[in-house]
Image (cartoon, rainbow, N blue to C red; front, top):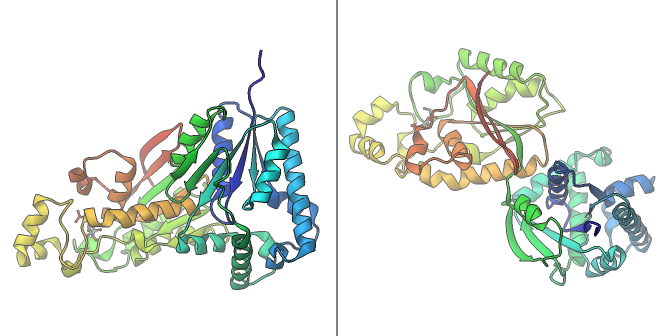
Length: 405
Ligand code: F6P
C-alpha cells in the first residue's frame, strides 16, 4: 500500500502578520482527525540556540554579517528538524518563520524535497492592527528588559529590516495568500497533489472562536430612565452585577477582555480586571461603542416620541435601516462593529477564552455576525443584562448558549 503523502507548509510574511495563529489553527484542527502536525518555529530555535539577547533590532539587520550567518544556521536547524519529523511519523510539518526572501524559499524547496510545499503568505496591511500586535509581542519575556515604547520601536525596526528583503511569494508552486484579519484568500494557486488542501483551505477561511463570552453591561443610570445615548455610569445594582460577572468567571482564564470606550462597559469590566491584574489584557474599542443616536442623545423613548413623532414612527416602520439624524442606524453601524469583532479575534490569537462587553444595539450586531437572522429582525434580538452568550464558532463546532451569571 502506498504510504500517505506528507506535506510541508511554509508560512511567509513579515513579523506580526498572524502567521503563528494560522499555524496553530491548522495544527489544532487537523490533530483532531489524528493527522500528525508539527510546528517548527525559528524563534523557538533561536531562543534555544543563542544564549545572548536576540530581541534587539540589530540582530535582524541584513548588513550585520555575523547575525545574518547565525540566522541562516537557525533556519537550517529548523528545516532539518521539520524534515526529520516528516521522515519519521509526522504528516505535516509547518515552518513558522518569515521566509520572506526568494533565496530562503529556494533553500526550503531543495531541503524539503520530495515533499510538496504549500506556502501560506500572511498579509495584514492595517496600521492600527499592526501597532496593537506589536504591543502584544513586546509583552513577551524577551522584551522584559526594555520599557514598552522602546521595545515597540525595536520591533518596528525589526519589521523594517524584513521589509527590505521581502519578495512576495509569487514564484511559489503552491501558494495561498491570506488576508489574516478577514480570513480572506486573496490569491491562490495550488496543485492537486497537496494533501489535505481542501480541509486546510476551509480552515483558512473559517472563524476560529474557541470560546467567546458576549456580555452586555448591567443596569446604567440611563437604563433606569429609559434614555438613549450619553455616557452614564452603572447604578449600584449594575455595579453589584459587575462583581457577580467577575465571580462567575473566577475559574476561567480570560487573557483578553474587550469593551467599548464608554463608561458603562468599562465599569462592567472593572471587577474582572481588578481581580486579574497581569493576566488579562483589556482593549477598549470605539468599534464597540453603542449606536450613535445623534440629535436624540439624552432623550428617553417617551420624550423622543413626543418631541420627534415622525422620526419615532419612521424608526418603528424600518428599524434596521433607520438612521438617527446626525448619528447612526443598525445598517450603518454594521461595518464598524464587524471590524471590531475581526480586531478582537485577530488580537486574541489562539486564546481559549475571550470576552466582549458591549451594549444592546452593538451586541445585536455582533450576534448577527454569528446567527442567521433576517436584517429586519436584528434590532429586536433580546439582549438581557444578567445573562451572557457563550459562542463557539470553529470548523467543527458551533455553539450558542445563553447563560446566567
Ligand atoms: O437603551 C439602552 C441602549 O443601549 C441605548 O443606548 C441604545 O440607543 C438602545 O439601547 C439601542 O436599542 P434600540 O435600538 O432597541 O433602541
